[in-house]
Amino acid sequence: MKLLMIYCNEFSYVPKVKTLEGYEEHNEGKTFKDSLVAFIQVEEKDEENPKSAEDKLLKNLKWAAKKNNTTKIILHSFAHLSESKASPETSKQIFDKVEQRLHNANYECEQTPFGYFLDIKVDAPGYSLARIFKDL
View 1: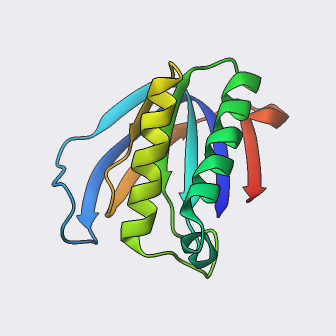
View 2: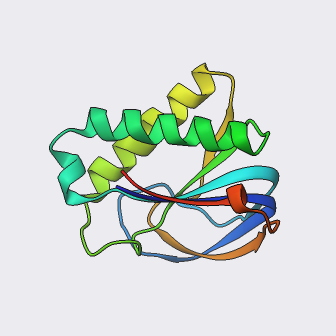
């Protein structure tokens, strides 16, 4: 799994092109303030042990959120961080489980529309822990 976390003063998206059938329809955009946005690529190797990938993702998200003094986390599927890709089903399953576990730990968590190209706007501050890359 590849993980790029960016703390954002403001992050917004608008769905533009649906790329995967069989997932929820989205037409409306959304804006978030003071949030950690996680650009996540689940890789083929993660399909061997999705629970381990889920645990590592959760641990890193909580750590980065704490370092940036936020409890708001946005999960964004970003299949451009590696050549290797897990199936959409595995990726979505991991996203859903991590979202639920974050809610259970008193974090505010949402996902961007899965299976869409989005117009995005990122307003991120310029300090080192506002941008973190991990190869999990």
